[in-house]
Image (cartoon, rainbow, N blue to C red; front, side, top):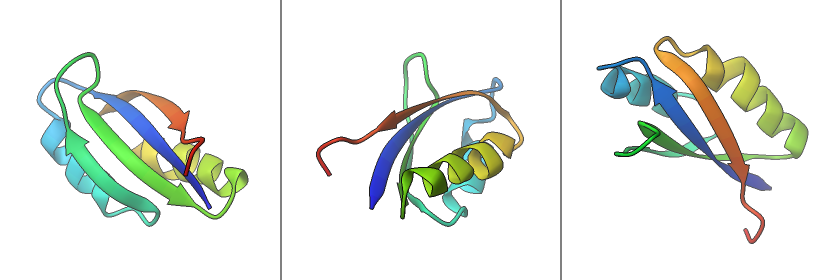
Length: 77
């Protein structure tokens, strides 16, 4: 099992809509709206690195309102 945090920047005023849409994606464990340079932090879980890549690129990054993501794989899970 591979886990990662995805740090998400959104368009202004879109954090609520983005967090709601992302939370409905299979493989998303938790979604938090935060302050700072990123607007939303997403905890994900996938069967492999390849599945994680698909989750991030094909699902999360396509959510309307997302302008940028940074994926941080968890090493001690």
